[in-house]
Amino acid sequence: MTDLPSKRIARIAITPGEPAGIGPDILIQLAQRAQTAELIAVADPELLLDRAKQLNLPLTIRYFDPNSKAQCSAPAELCVEAIKLKSIPRAGCGTPDSAPYVIQTLDRATQLCQQDITNALVTGPINKHLINQGVAWGDSSSGNHSSSSIAHFSGHTEYLAAITHTPLVVMMLSTQLQSSNRPLRVALVTTHLPLRNVADAIQPEMLEQTITILHHDLVHKFGINNPAILVCGLNPHAGEQGDLGDEELRIIEPCLAKLRERGINLSPPLPADTLFTTKYLNQADAVLAMYHDQGLPVLKSHGFGQAVNITLGLPIIRTSVDHGTAFDLAGTGKADTGSLQAAIDTAIILSEHQQDRYKNSITKFAQTSSRDSS
Image 1 (cartoon, rainbow, N blue to C red):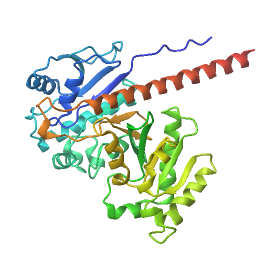
Image 2 (cartoon, one colour; image 1 turned 135 degrees about the horizontal axis):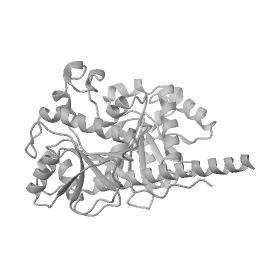
Image 3 (cartoon, helix red, strand yellow; image 1 turned 45 degrees about the vertical axis):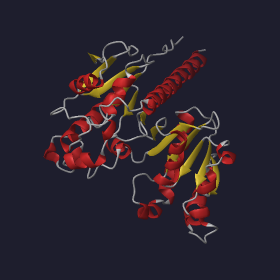
Image 4 (cartoon, rainbow, N blue to C red; image 1 turned 90 degrees about the vertical axis):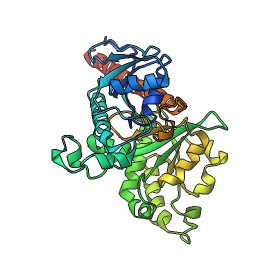
């Protein structure tokens, strides 16, 4: 009989993000209480100790040993995979000089996940403008293995897709609805695009791949059987039968019809101004919005500071906070840890689903082998 692996303690890699922002603060604040997983900060330990001193909070650094047995993080302790800064920035004063460090932390944390050394990646807030100022994208002599193949940094989601060689990923944010116990999950067809480019970007193949990834991960990462997905129209009133735009008729609905034939539970294109109401959301497992500011303002109005950003389609589990660097709060102790804790909790849940699927596959293999041998 095949022995099943016992439930293991998850190891969660965390990149605090922009070193002059609130990323280090919220990680140190959150580390003051015990966690149900081992948190591995991929960061400069001197930065963390310096910021802890500024926040007047205790912090013990334990250097990460991948060969050691995973242990839940103790209060006021952080396990660190060390990546060094050229210099420790002053809290609230971001500069392009820290950009290569931010990219190195992302590269190393992703590598740890790809090698199954850690079970998931949680990312802190970054500043895209400073990163693009500080990294010589497209320059193979820059010393960064990722920079020579990327022309521009447009966000965590796109960068992680590039370095994991993933053709298409889907950004989804999740929060708890204030009016019920149901989560609100909003996935995006397009992400960081100028609004004038959105309509041209929504093409049948890309839309089909996006919905397929969304459905797959709702089933296999979240454990939802036959998830119900509400789809926003692109135009006001979902195009009003072509009077206010014909993308719904030409592109969106034909794609949805094709995917319904494969068994995916999809609504017709619905007007976004009424879709986000209790009548619809109580029946939905996720909402698919056509562009960034169509869906995310609604989600963040329900739970800003408590929402989680999840990247679907990657070969690793990745969650993130729903807020920015908040330079004005860095070093003050006033930053809210709610979104980071929610991102960690979600990463733990997803990694447990992943382990359960692995155990189930072993069980099925053992049962098949037993039948074959008899």
